[in-house]
Image (cartoon, rainbow, N blue to C red; front, top):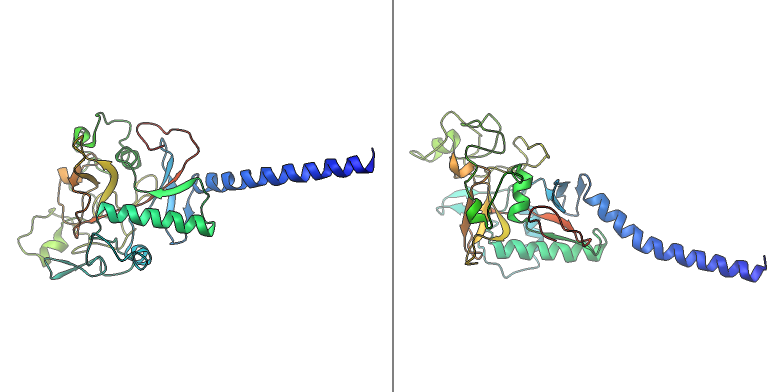
Length: 292
């Protein structure tokens, strides 16, 4: 073969390999991030949720996660997220590993957008990936009821599956099931509604990951803080959706996996927080209402 032809063919081969690598490496990275446990730049651990196009953070967003974002974003709906007090007296989430509270849906969406931009810039995630809040349908798949719910809106689905919890059908919950209004809270807040014969050891919130995870390895899908979802509650589009109950709830209905709470997207409280999902936008749709 003519050596000039050989050099030309070699140059073409190198160019083809370069183009292939430029496309293949981000796709490989995206696949690895959504197929097993993966840790991001903030130490959030993500696991794949079947029947969706996302991986869920196994933990609710923590005070230390939100602090990094808030340092760059002075305008927030929520106040005192870093020094939250119940009735202006009792500390809530007073450590870096506790779930952040006093966060509106608007604040949570802004956090996800900031984290997406930050990690795309650093190369931690690929261009087709993004962080966001889970949809209501994705949250149902994560908690284990995605194949059993019917209805067009979260309102129509709310509390339709009775006596099903992230830990099963037992109530009161088994030891270590989660952080709820319990004997520990009753000892501090006398005459408080509470779950009889259950003591999680925490008066308000607990550090994330302290209780038994579900089958996918996701923690605190009941209790600790109520979690914002991306959806509106109904067709009026006036209120957002919260799932999972919180440390102030003693159920049983408020802790059902199918129960939804709802409030305006700019509202916040010492019982509301969020968790992130990581989406890989490859153009394929996921099942049963998950976002593209």
